[in-house]
Amino acid sequence: MLYDHLLIRYGELTTKGANRAEMEQLLERNVRRALSAWPEVKVARSQQRIVVQLNGAPVDATLQKLQQVFGISSISPVAVAPLDLAAIQQTAVEVGKRELMDKSTFKVEARRGFKGFPLDSPALQKAVGAAVLRALPHIRVDVHRPEVVIEVDVRKSAAYVYPSRVPGLGGFPVGMSGKGLVLLSGGIDSPVAAWKAMKRGLELELVHFHSFPFTSERAQQKVEDLAAVLTKWGGPMKLHLVSVTAIQAEIQRAAPEGLKTILLRRMMVRAAAKIAEEVGAGALVTGDSLGQVASQTLAALNAVDRATDHTILRPLIAEDKLEIIELAKRMGTYDISILPFDDCCSLFAPKHPKTNPKLHDLERAEARMDVEHLIADAVTSREEKLVTADEVFGASATYL
Image (tube, rainbow, N blue to C red):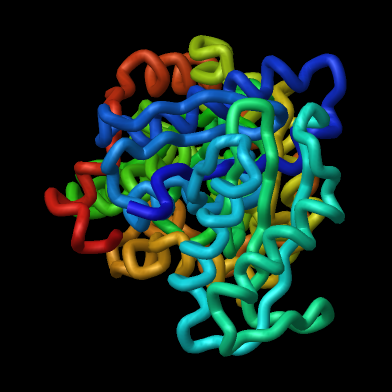
C-alpha cells in the first residue's frame, strides 16, 4: 500500500501558546477514539502534526472517520520514505506514477522541517522534481496552475510524500472548552446548534422535554435518533428525558393564552440549569435564531434569559433558516427532524403568542404556580440514557 500513513494538521490550536500542548493531547485522544475500530492503527504526535500509521487499515474509511473530528484542519494520505535523497526521489516517483497517469502538469513543494537534512527546501524541491520528470516524460512542470502538487515534508524521523490535502472540520477538539447542556427538541435547529457548539470545543450532554402521553414514544425515538447522529462528532452522549406534562397543566391553568410558550420555555431553562449544575455543564445551548418564531424575538429571548443565572449560548442566533437547513442536511439530521411527530412546544402552542412579552406579566403568572416544586419534580423524575451512534432507529444506515 503506497499511502500507509495519514498526516493530520490542526489550525487554530497552533495559536494557543502555553495551552497548546494540552489541546494537542486532547485532539490526539479524539483521533484515537475515532479510529478505535482499527486496533492495528498507531497514533503519535510529531512536530505540530499527528501521524497515523495505518498498518493495513483502509485509507478511505479511516480518512472519512477523521473528517468527523473537530480540531483537524486538513489530512493527507502519505507515503513515507527514509531520510535519504534517493529514497525520497523514488517515493515521489511512485506517487507521481499513481497521480499523474492522466495528467500533464505538476510541481513539487518541499519543506525541511528537520534542519539536519543536508538539502534545504529549494534544493530538495529541484532534485525531487527532476526525478519525477525523468520517470514520467509525458508531463511538464507548471508552477502556477499544476494539476497535481507533490508535497515533500521532511521530518526528524522520516520524509512524508503526498499529493493532496483533504479538508477537515477545523474548530477545537471536543472537550477543550468544557461541557455544555443542549436543549434538544425534535426540530431542525437544535441539532445544528449542538454541532456548532461541538466545533468550538464543547463536550455535550443533552436534555429533551416531553409531554408523554400527549407526545408519542415515536417523538422520543426521533430525538434519540438525532442524538445518535450527533455522537458521530462528539462520541457517546448522555440524554436526559424530562417530562413537563405537570408543568404544562399548571401553565394551562394559571397563565394567559399568549404567554404560555414563553412560560414553558422559562420553566425548561430552569430545569435545564439544575441538571447542568448536577453534571458540571458551564452553559446551556439552544437552537434559537433571532426573530425566526414568536418565542425568539429579542423581548422573548430576554424574558427566557431572566429565568436563570446560567449562561445560555445560542450558536444560531444570527443564522438564516436556509443556512441552518443546509447544514442539517449535510449533518444528516434534516430527514429525521422533519418527521411529523409533535413535540411538547408545538402541541400546546397558543394561536396568538405574544411577541413582546413583559417580564412583570410572566412573573405574575408564575406567582400563581409552585415553580420550585414543579421544577424539582421534573428534574428528579427524569430518565437518563447513554446514546451511541449505533442506535439510530435500530439501524444506523437509515439516516447515516
